Image (cartoon, rainbow, N blue to C red; front, top):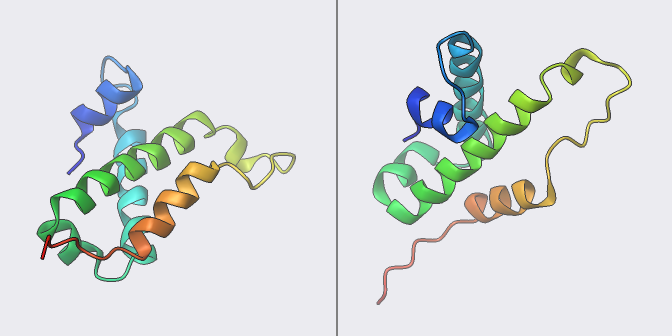
Length: 102
């Protein structure tokens, strides 16, 4: 599970001036994942591989939203903020089937 401290380390942010924004972005990333992936919470808890990929995808969401926060209200900005990698990982998580090794 991602934490404020891990997000700040990932983004190389010192201090607490951005904490409120980062907490908001973390909540949005979590809500996005929960809304986009069936049984997200249960699968996250049950499968460490799923959780690792889900955490990385949340970091990607947060990084993208943080870096483009000024463009969010700019009508000239295009809607294609997320990369192909982001959507490929989301598709993988949406179609996740646990590998049991059986």
